[in-house]
Length: 319
Image 1 (cartoon, rainbow, N blue to C red):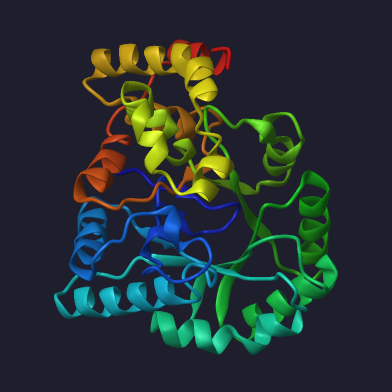
Image 2 (image 1 turned 180 degrees about the vertical axis):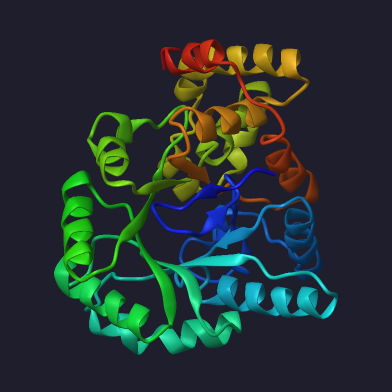
């Protein structure tokens, strides 16, 4: 699999990483978003990913109150004992109702859970801290200087907040390398609100979470709308998976299927391919996986490249 530069760093990452919110182990307020995944399946998901050149994993302190980090740390150690090289790790600090002090106060717990001496990319999960962006960035810079983390990223930041973080880091002799946001063929807000433009202007990568709109872009809900009733209510609300939404997005799903037939790919693979190629090398994607065929599907999205006219047709599809 090809790699691309994260931001303006020398860190070369695969265009898709492995999202691990689903590794929460039933812990935390939002753990019911996903079906439970047993340890061996999680280990096999990561093993298959690494074997197919997916070279990084995204997690967060908030995913199961550290459970995702703990599981990843254990799996990586077991795989390393088998001679399999560890992936790069992108982690996220949880800022809600906290100050920037907790960035430095909690880093050692993150490292213990991950069983790593340093985190490759450490991100501010939301712009919801009691502290200013400047104070948060100062704490992140301290972690860089202490070699606890390698690079600084943010998540869910607006264009203005990105600019602030970027400038503060630049003045400190560091850099903002990424902004992790919801982005996919259905949710394209960053194309209108300045986030994508700001990222491209400043050499900041976009890391797209929910790249398949939590399953909507697979087409499975269009084929089997009764599945909507099985979704956790918060997932239905956040993803907007409703019968009305299915009707509005049916033309897009039809086009994804049509292109999938041409390339012998699934609608999800076409949607992911659009995502990682529509803006040069700016956008990375972090699809999750709860079953082995999910991770195999994610990997298959990188083995071809849509024509520019096909990407344009998807981009112009009315939602």
